[in-house]
Figure 1 (cartoon, rainbow, N blue to C red):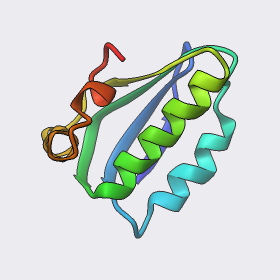
Figure 2: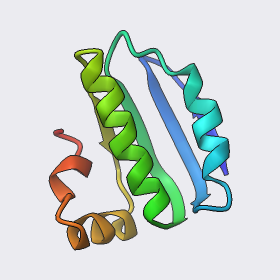
Figure 3: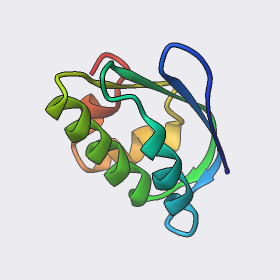
Figure 4: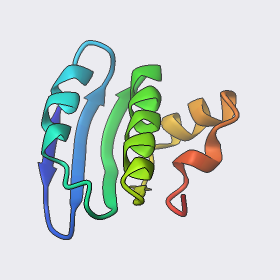
Length: 96
């Protein structure tokens, strides 16, 4: 799993993001700049589970508290399927 900052408060996630390694993402996310909106590029994400969905919701709440947003770029299909299952697809789309 790899989580790196690029530019303009954009972060790139790569690899599998499951309960076993989600704590590494949580630790790295402490570097987020909540003074502006954040984009998470997920085009390199492989296997996921509900822990990633929960983390995205947590990030969305933190951003909203700071009057900003977290945008998800290139969400993997397995994340979108999981979001649809929970009725939360609109929270994952890059427009929200």
